[in-house]
Length: 376
Image 1 (tube, helix red, strand yellow):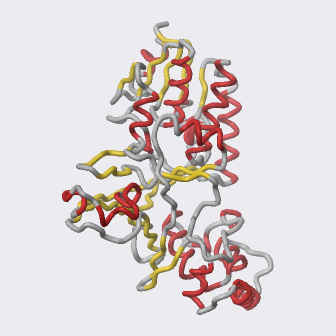
Image 2 (cartoon, helix red, strand yellow):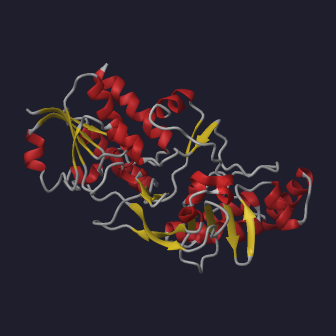
């Protein structure tokens, strides 16, 4: 055995495990099927603009231990996630707050907004929601649902809202204050210089092989390490023994524009169904923010890079982004989880290895929990 650990995947989970194992004197090999490290948090510097190649990643947490941990590797700015939603020729603030309600109904006080929502809920008379559409209307009324939830949700899931189960939307964030901050978390920001540098620092001094697909080289790779940390799809690891877990995928179209400021915000959601993409990301807003108009670098000041994000049906061969955690898939995952208990030399981690939608802070917490259990 040449290595203590073979780590499959160089995203946040795999990189943290490798970093912590290396600190403890363990010999690691990290492999990734892509041609770069950092998994889905990979950012590419394109002539001064850090492009989030796999969709917007905004770090947020209320856990000070996690915040301090990630701040070892980069300096974070004070970026606040304040997306806006565009519905036809109207623009609204997200999450639903007093700015949203004022524009929708011409109300000014929380009492007026609550009254309007309650009136709409009562008028619909839904007591036992049978699908996602009925569930959403029973929570926030028809106006907000039709303008800001319906089309976006149908695009995300690739199904009409009346065909989706009600449990998908257990609650919708409604705030009766004039505050456009999307997250409630205490700590929030974007690493100055992008996310890739964080993973580079974690993997410094550790052997990394890119363009290396575990499944194409499985026999050889399984022989060279005492243990495997696997962050790919757990069902694929077991050759789909019980069947395929389901995902939603994404497709991105990125282009450069010869304007300094294309849409005035990092993220603009498009909530009408007829527009095929769910959002446009303008990457320079993540890092330059209010200083956008004072940029000394003329090249960066006069150009921008935008990405249109399209939800996509997932099939084998496409990138799996979002686990579909409905009852059917969760039951199937439990079978793979039971099977994994017999694989004493394999640790499954991350969004695909644990078939769970994780925010970045939760990935870090889970990786550190695994490290503590495995290495301390």
